[in-house]
Length: 374
Image (cartoon, rainbow, N blue to C red; front, side, top):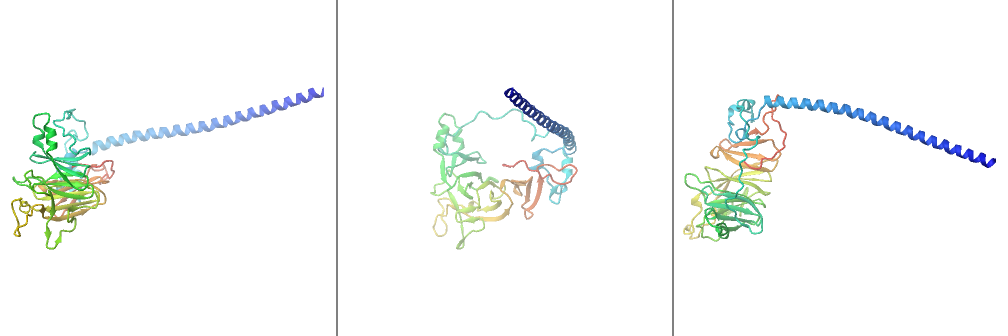
């Protein structure tokens, strides 16, 4: 009887412990469920708030679209009536935007579906096994200049590359003139032809910050095509020019020539833009001409820095406007283009790329882009 009694007591104790454990689990589950329900209620309220905020933002965006329709990008930035009547304190007024028609903005709309898909000619391995980094065609379509990661600038007769025959492009590559520039060539530009005359020069911007001025004439018979600056007395030109030519602190991002003067503008990742006046044709003597001392002077050219500008960030792109009277620049991290009047001491005018902020009367300085070419 005693054993039976003890067994019954033990079973009762175990049943009691089991009941207590189940009760604790049930209590814990109820508490967890309550917490989850509170969290769901909190998130539901937040969702409703976000939905309301989203609707409000949509309405605000629509309002901005109606009140401050952006003009066509090309008209806003590249030559689009940036005169004094529309500029106050170096910034564009709202009247510039208000006077634009309600025509479709070609910059933000899709194209017409027409795009090049059949190459007219392919120049195989023009830089060997290295990648080509840039190319530019001479204004008279006679010469194609390409820069490569092999630190060379190649000059190719563009007409021969387009000649009939399967081997024309191969022959054009084989006959191309190869000039070593000492560093990868990442941008290039031919001197402009003005009134039937022009310098037979192509400027090559390099990874090491140098700008090589190269004689690009195919009738050149000298041994050195890279032009060096002339001596001035016993010293070479300084301030942006060393014994090898134009020089920047970091790699050169853009090189452009003025359309009406022998001036080359160079932009660099070090935040500088330099305008250099290059000697005219009289300063580049032919191979048959000698100077007064009987020395052949071919391979040198006068270089004079006429303006140097410094910015807070890398200068991504530049171009000349108004027949060379205005220089347009874009600096990474800014929301505007800078116009410099070269006839008025490089006076700066800013033109916002975001348009004018509705209701604020000032620039929208948000930047979500970079202008890589002008």
